[in-house]
Length: 88
Image (cartoon, rainbow, N blue to C red; front, side, top):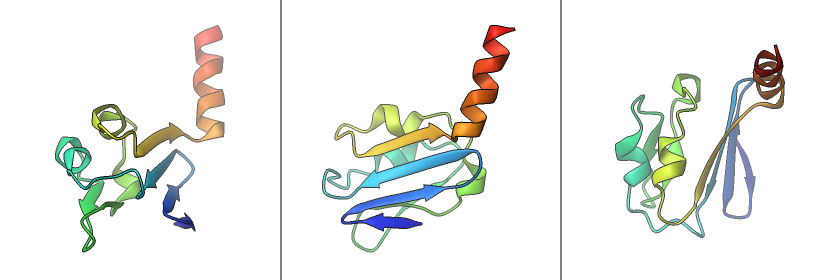
């Protein structure tokens, strides 16, 4: 995990998840909608990634967040592979 101010970045070779704690009001919608339980609420009442490897990049957390405080992106390498498949 990388931390830049109140922005936390979690990444592996397939996915990158960024959580902006300053924007987050702690509603836990992202945690509730995650089908793989990648996220959990921490002791400060903010979401954190607890199982990055389980993330399927469905982006339900990203799409449902009313504060735009969470972003889910595919890794650059994975995005390039997907783009090449689309050109085929």
